[in-house]
Image (tube, helix red, strand yellow):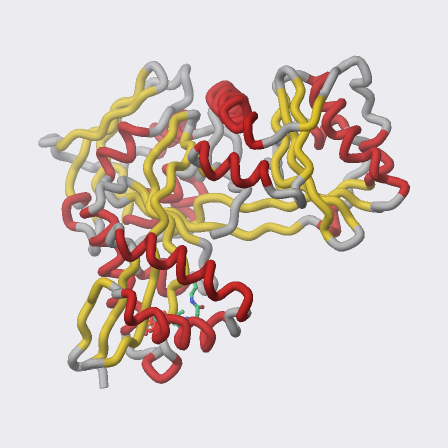
Length: 389
Ligand SMILES: CC(C)(COP(=O)(O)OP(=O)(O)OC[C@H]1O[C@@H](n2cnc3c(N)ncnc32)[C@H](O)[C@@H]1OP(=O)(O)O)[C@@H](O)C(=O)NCCC(=O)NCCS
């Protein structure tokens, strides 16, 4: 059945077949969402980012590749976001998904992405191909009444609209550079303007911060809040909390180390949700060169990388980190080096301590004495994402 598998670019006339496989995988596509879905799909097709697998003359699988930028250590790094991975039920469990994902990896490399990330519905297939947990999408919940009394009444805020998109992106960039943020997606200005234009989103802007929130059934939900000072954080959260006479809880997509955790008295922990996403380095030297490292860290260490899917990453490398930047160059040194596979490298890149990677069998060799400096170089706030894709 799977003898004649071919990796292909999806064409417009195959979109009905993709929808058929998709509805068997994720549930039916609502009739009202169909037109928008096809419009989006065509954009991916036109840029060579909608791919599939044919079994003979039938489409058996499909996946799309988002052209994203992701913050790593305060720098923006191009990232291939993999989504809509679907295999038709009658072809599952026969290697079709793996063939598809191998093609996706190669296409992402060909498009010049140093990194790839995805939200796994099942981790098995992605781990086989070198993805590992990189961070989470966290949704916390606070009693609205507690936010209401956070203060900041001297801060002036006003309603924001699409014309404020540039200003909002500048505030985001300032926050993520200063916080050396990792994980967040960076959106183009047109998308931000669209988001601010939507009447269902309530956007407010202060001199050094903004919030975008909306109704979520009978609760309120913060989709993004950036504040560059304590007073503005108080003012923006209190604005959302002012809805407490109607909304009991405020759900919030934020970092696990967001200042509000330390400002607010109670956190409704039992409502916390985490969706973990996975990361993979596609081009190890380019990924290392693009991210920011801990500013005080200084590191010279050899790595022995083994990447069974992307051979160009395999080999002995020298990792050098200084002044917040890193380089990965081929090494001719001999002797024992820190050994990592693609999964270990991805988890390390995302700041996972080497002790955890050694404990999981994802790192070995080298001298454990140099684990501390390696951890320090990659350390930073927990990688988090606000968006699901
Ligand atoms: C998940 C999916 C894409 C896998 O496709 P597939 O063609 O069955 O995958 P493969 O045959 O190449 O399997 C690759 C590996 O993943 C494992 N695997 C596949 N589906 C799995 C599942 N649901 N749970 C656990 N492991 C799974 C296989 O056992 C195999 O591992 P092994 O070699 O160690 O046995 C397919 O089942 C599917 O379309 N599911 C519904 C939609 C979905 O969940 N998509 C993923 C969105 S992130």
